[in-house]
Image (cartoon, rainbow, N blue to C red; front, side, top):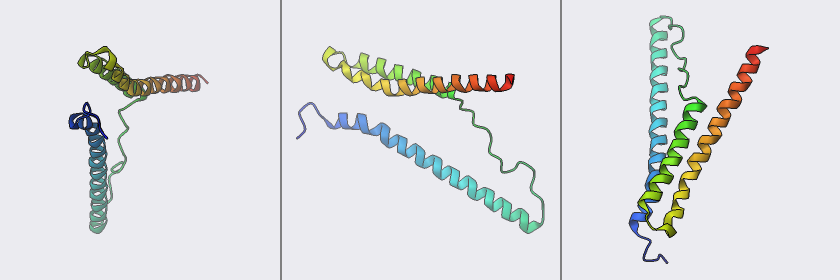
Length: 128
């Protein structure tokens, strides 16, 4: 079913990033669950001792990732993937694989557009 050119290395090259992505999301969800459990334990202990909770103890910090930052990162990742695949694959007939970088490139451009639209809306709201 598989051709001679299709090797286990090719399969690994395309599946390992997806496995790492799932692994990263799993680690983040476990971390979030542990943090919430620790907050609940702290809340119960303070109630048992009759103490009051400090203001803002359970408020989440604002996210640092703005659409501008995410957009720039994804755009540059897309360009980098395309250039890397273009250089690694020297045969011109196989350089079509470099098109893989278009997905993160387009996602990055979308985040940049979102940033500028939100900025324009915020500026118009502040003027009024």
